[in-house]
Picture 1: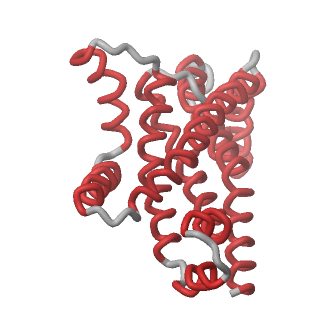
Picture 2 (picture 1 turned 30 degrees about the vertical axis):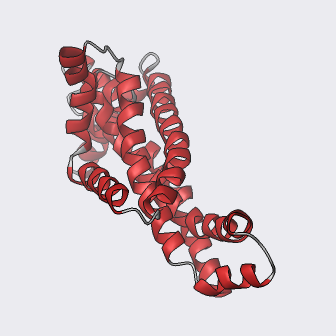
Length: 234
């Protein structure tokens, strides 16, 4: 029984070495990383601006920002992907590729989440930081850019790394809008070998899990280390 189980596992993993299956999975992982990287870069930039806007003491603007934030949090990313990929084409005549729709959705979502992190970091800044700047004769803009922003960025680094990890893991949803990434390629390999190697799914999904783990684990570890360092400093 034990040997038969090992043989079944060995047979399942043999699918990785047929043709260019493993290379194809690596190529799919690269597509996943590219979509995540572009989305993250846009999200960090626009999220920082959005977070600053959220701190503006103007009620109508605060209401609009809150509506946008809550909408992005409540609406599942898969639904947003369908709206961007299928809805825009049918209602607005805007045709987006799966990759473009994915970057658009993840950027909108990431901007909302990053913006809320920035808002929280700015609101939690001690008032004496502003008072100290004024005592030194600095103007409000100088206080904001030279004192508040640098401290905010240091606080945001571990939090933003956790958000980046979430965004990378969520990219698996792009398979539903026709993007040929690692999960889609894995499904293609499983389907192509389902008769000769019925247990191929075990190996393929195990490798995909390991690939996501390799990409996300260093970010999680780094975020934990940075959080501990910040607690020690404070």
